[in-house]
Length: 165
Image (cartoon, rainbow, N blue to C red; front, side, top):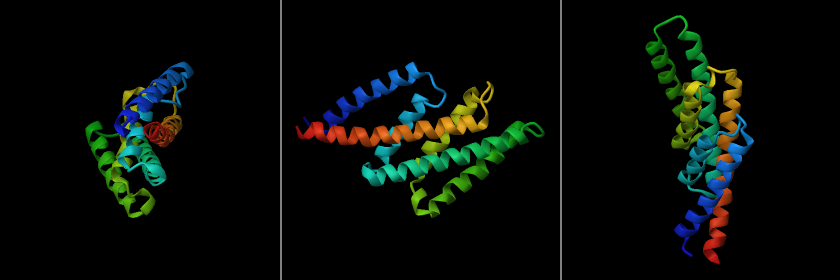
């Protein structure tokens, strides 16, 4: 079996199992769509242990910056024009986010965005509208992002073994 076919089969099986597990567990800390974003980030970073390290660090950096930005937005929006508060918070956050690439471990800018965007998505889709704190939102993002990167490296190794057989 070729590598593409092996990746398709392995990731299909693992993706199905991960989805079933996330639905069965029902934990706010295992958000399957965030996990899939990080899984893709692992491959976009080049895979292997280097890709795992680059992707995971950049994803977490993005999640942290998004959380700080969203916390600031939640404070500013109560006292000023909401679109202006959003524009200021996101604009400043993106500058800080990308400047993080000056640190070698955070140099994978797409991975930063792969961490920032789903964290913002958790916020925008009502994570804070419920009983969840901003800390819970960050924890859910980080746990899901790390799980995705772990699934990335496991799927890469498994697909490599299947392709060789």
